Image (cartoon, rainbow, N blue to C red):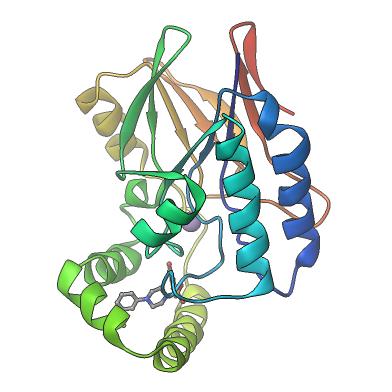
Length: 233
Ligand code: OKV
Ligand code: MN
């Protein structure tokens, strides 16, 4: 019995090597697992399930093939691909989970999340998140034709790139007090998240915090959890 956890692949057309690594993982490693958990930012951006491209269809096919062959695939939305919806889920068999989700890993209660909600020091980002997560705002955005959404998203990304230059490394990391509170609230022994791109296994006083890394052209951050142990492969 094996579980795999990945996050922050940020798949995009300009880095085809990462998509190739993902497809390789989905064909070679994932089918041997009980379940694959994708903890957000599978895609670098997502403006609606109606967008189509070779990249998107290759990824959808890989997930569909996996779920059809019996491996479960779960997804928690990231700060970039939070608009992935029901249609994607139905086309691929990938189950979309809420922002926080507790699972049992061989007797260890484990909280899963993307990780952006833990970065409470980044006030600007939390403000942005609150806005774009409003159901009415999303509904209106999704009513626009695809060509408008592409333009709007490009504008938002350009503006965000500008603002990011002024943010310190500490602001971009999780807030330790808030994270401890969340872990207490959910009464878990372990937390797995991504988002900060700082792959690590932290042994805190009352819980273990596992941070999934981001994917690069020559590096796939994959956490493997077996009864015998937990490690990055
Ligand atoms: C995702 C981030 C761009 C960060 C817009 C309503 C609104 C959704 C949207 C547009 C942008 C996602 C969907 C994207 C994340 C950025 C820039 C910074 C920090 C609206 C609902 F407001 F227009 F009505 N969006 N896209 N950023 O390009 O994928 O996470 S995105
Ligand atoms: Mn993220």
